[in-house]
Image (cartoon, rainbow, N blue to C red; front, side, top):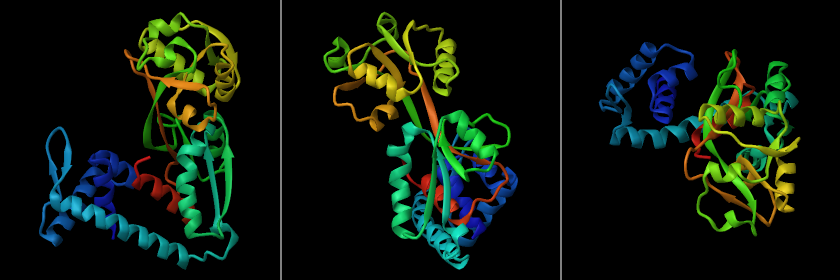
Length: 291
């Protein structure tokens, strides 16, 4: 089963080093597991070059089966560990508010359908607060855009979330397929306050690209920025997921035509720690789907 798990991890990431880091083994040990599995099946599962890793046709077929096999094993182990105990039924998960509706809830619903007696504690907080909650072990894992470079944190990327321009439907930009940063810089722009995780990320990306925006408004939360946009008070540069999560009929998202900046949403947990059974099952479901 360890060999199959190792294979599935490499198949998901198509990168031996990244898969080895997730499994907490060395790349050479991972290679031996894959070689052992290939020898036992008498097929080649991967084609490796100096630049990339690709699944062979046999590897693609095995990957489809492996995901079902591993999922069934996890469910069996979860049941054997005692679903009736309150601790084993509890999921403690954190999530930045912008990803709650579109990223966390669809997958969480699938788990709850399978385990209706599960109890869920959701901590919806800022990216900085989620890191604190993780270090204090108030949550088992979280969904955030911060943590990739934090000491003692495992970060599993889920999706790239590009920044877009949010405008009202009667704004001149609303009918455009794309706009430039130079055009946006001339607008009355709404931003998150200084010190907010999203603002820090935005300022860093702008500095890296040598771009600048003159902010006309500062607000505490992205949802507040979208409220101002909805009232026609200005435009806001926000991650695309924030638009998906909002419910403003008059707010339109317009992509940038030139320099693209984005944030990476991913799963975060403490390094070298074992998640509770149900939390591990939820984590594994995220890593197997395309969000």
